Each structure stands twice: as structure tokens, then as C-alpha cells.
Amino acid sequence: MCKGFKIFFVLIVLLSSVFSHSLNAQNRMDSLLTIKKLIQKHNTISTADVGLISSPSRHWCAFVYALYLANTEELRQMTYDTSAALRIYAYAGLVHYKNPDLKNIKKKLYNDNGTVQTHFGCINGKPIDVANGTKQFIKMNSKGNEINRLLLLLKNDEKFRTQLYD
Image (cartoon, rainbow, N blue to C red; front, side, top):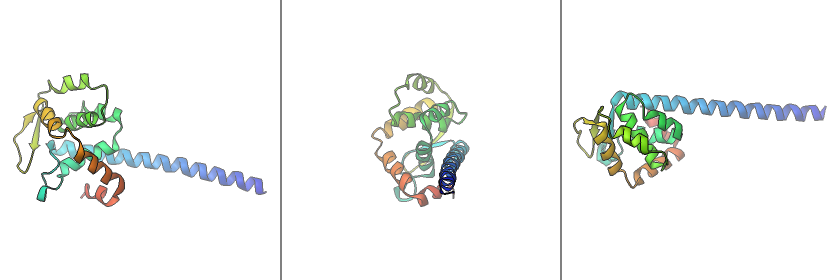
């Protein structure tokens, strides 16, 4: 009887662990899809400090949240998305993670004539093509300090993560 209970208990723990992992993976995918839709809808790239009193803009936070949620393959796939902003942000994510396979993606984006709205600094900019948007975004975020700060905040602050959906 005791041996049967132990086996039953171990099976319950294993099944709950598998279910929990599956649920977390689904939540991650749902969140990533929501963030991708937000980026696609606005089709805007921005620097980190453009919001009220130089706070991070929603566009910037959405980019960093997508970076937080997506794996390398998902970022690579996003570089082929119909949204110019998502293509730029995905490439920037691959650059941030120092992905070694960037040559072809960079070549593709540097010849991309799709348009994206910009928000650099405290003013809304005019639409620019993906090639120039990619170059400007990478140049402005070359150190990655603000990206790393927000990634750490996303990992540790659930309240901050939920603010992106308001």
C-alpha cells in the first residue's frame, strides 16, 4: 500500500510538472503574439527614452518584451514579417544577443524599402525606409545598456510586464 502511494505521488508530481511547463510555454507564446500584434499595429520604432519625462515608450518596451520572450529562431522568423517595425526590432534583438548568423538578414534589411514610423528622442519623426531605420536603430542602441536594464526589469517585476497591456 505504501509503495503504491509513493508511485501515485511521484506520478502526480511528474504530471503536474509537465502540465505546468506546457502552460508556461503557452503563456509565453500568447504574450509574444500579443506583443507582435502591438508592434505590427503601430509600425513604429523608437529609442529608449521618448516617453513622458524621458521614460521608455510603449514601442520601446514592446521591443524589449519581445526580445525577452522570443528565442533566436523566433527572432529570425520575425525578420521576414510584414511589419517593418517588427523586422527592425527582430534584427536588433539578434544583434543584441550577438547572433553569429546575421550577414544574410542584414543584407536583406539594408535593401528593404518598406517604411516605418520613427520616434527618436522627444519628437515623432517622419516615416523612413527599413534600411535607414535599421541602421539608425542599431547605431542608437549599440551599447545595449537600456536594453539590458529593461530585460532585467521584465525578468524581476511582474507589475511592469502587465503595464504593457494597458
